[in-house]
Amino acid sequence: MFVRVAGKGKIMTIQTSYCLTETDLNHLKKWFSHYVRSFYCADPVTQQAIELKEKHSLRVCREILNLGRQLGMSQNGLRIAEAMALFHDIGRFDQFTRYRTFVDRKSENHAQLGVDVLRRENTLAVLNEETRNVILKAISFHNRLSIPDGETPICMHFSKLLRDADKLDIFNLVSNYYCAGPGEKSNAIELDLPDTPGISDEILTSLLNGKMISMQQMQSLNDFKLLQMAWIYDINFQPAFLIIQERDYLKKIRDALPESDRIDHIYDHLLSYLKQRSDSSDPPQMIPV
Image (tube, rainbow, N blue to C red; front, side):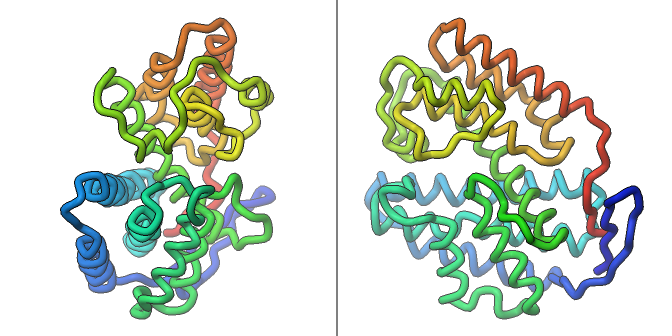
């Protein structure tokens, strides 16, 4: 595979050995389906949680393919992206079965659990080492507050792509959930957070300063909703900003929050940032071709 790497005013073309064939991808899809179905059970709470993450994983595949095509990625690059999207939450199934929660701080880091599963099961054995490593790294980075410094441009590209695709589907999932109004609660979506009034001052301050918020700062469901809105600070590619704008995700989440001048101020601030990034014509840093 060849990649174009943009930087310092010029574009360089380099060759890599990243490769994932259509046959490989079909093999991985069959493995995923078989593995997930091994967690199906008669308990309705567990079954609902397993299906929630199974469907989420498949939707993230669609989101990442949509983004990748808009970025001009090759078929090979798209297959690699789809594989990492398919497996990005593979640790969730074992996590919920063992701990009855999707809250990492109450159980284990689900990204690392997923990497451990793929290594233990030797799932990626059909791929060469370079391709395996970039998939595992992107999975391990997808839930971190930020991607570690020092990674290769290709690893950074795929990691950013996965993070954007994951957030796009979570935006879709939670906005639909909030818009549905009062009804049966989903602890799997609300992450066991109390639905209490008010917003933490720490959350408000971080948002106004353009900072990402960590899960450790969450004290209530309202805090979590604001964290979800703040994810736009961690979106990387212009097509993702445009999708968020077109689907009106920020407004849908804002409408699920209490009336408050402070929240309105933050909402306007986030909308301004979203418009600025949506209108930006900055070229992507790296496009697999």
